[in-house]
Length: 155
Image 1 (cartoon, rainbow, N blue to C red):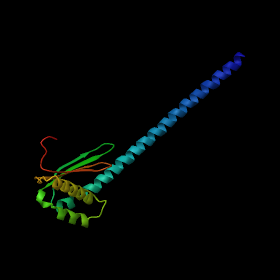
Image 2 (cartoon, one colour):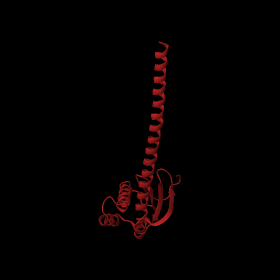
Image 3 (cartoon, rainbow, N blue to C red):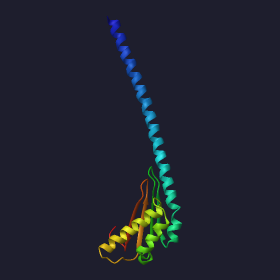
Image 4 (cartoon, one colour):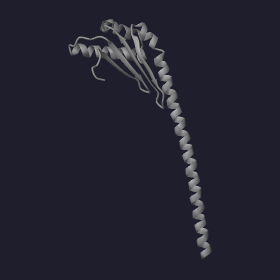
C-alpha cells in the first residue's frame, strides 16, 4: 500500500512540475506577444506622427508659423506642435474655402474644422477674436487639436 501512495505522490509531483513548465512557457509566449504588440503600437504611432509632420509645410503655406515642436518617445510616441498666426488671417470665409479644397479625414481638414468651430463659438459668444490665433496639435494614436485666440494667463 505504501508503494501505491508513493507512486501517487510521484505522479502528482510530476504533474505539478509539468504544469509549472507549461505556465512558464505560456508566460514567455504571452510576454513575447505583449512586446510584439507594443512594438506594433509604437510603429503605428510613428507612422501617424510622420503623416502629421508632412502636413506642416502646407499649414505654414496657409500662413501659420510653427512656434513649438516636440516629440516624446515612448510606447505611445507623442508629437506636440504649436502654430500661430494673426487672427484676422483666417476669417470664416477663408477657413471654409480651405476646407473645401482639402478632403475630409486629412490633418489639414481636421485642423481647419477645429478652427471653424472655435471661430463660430467665438462669434456666438460675441467675443472679439484676440491675437495670436494659436493651434496646438498633440498627435498620438488619436490626435488632439486645441485652437485659441489670445494667450492664456494660466496653463
